[in-house]
Image (cartoon, rainbow, N blue to C red):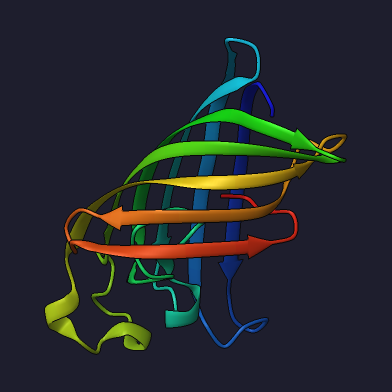
Length: 177
């Protein structure tokens, strides 16, 4: 469990002659966590990013455990992105050195391909240029080592409202759902 604010700024610029590509991308991620009623926690997170002339492998993505549970990993791609997440977790029980928590979440996101004109790396599938809003909700389980505040095992089931389908996520290690 954590409480308080956090923020991360990410930038990447690739220019010749160092790279065969010429693109730029910047993303800002932040949020706030509140400790409520003892060991309960409410987290609100947001992410926004924009890029210019990004090659396919560098594009911003939407879908998967890190930003939009309820949609397949990297299901949507683009160069402009905004994501919001609300997550509420409660303790379940302690067993030996492990702590178990349950959570409920709602994820909402927008992704678009806005700067494809003149980008020879991204001039295919012109009908796919545009924007998509997606929303999902679900529940999950986290397993922590009591003395460490980061989850070591995560299991989520998300339901994508626009796709009408469930996605299951399982992560091992220091998970960042």
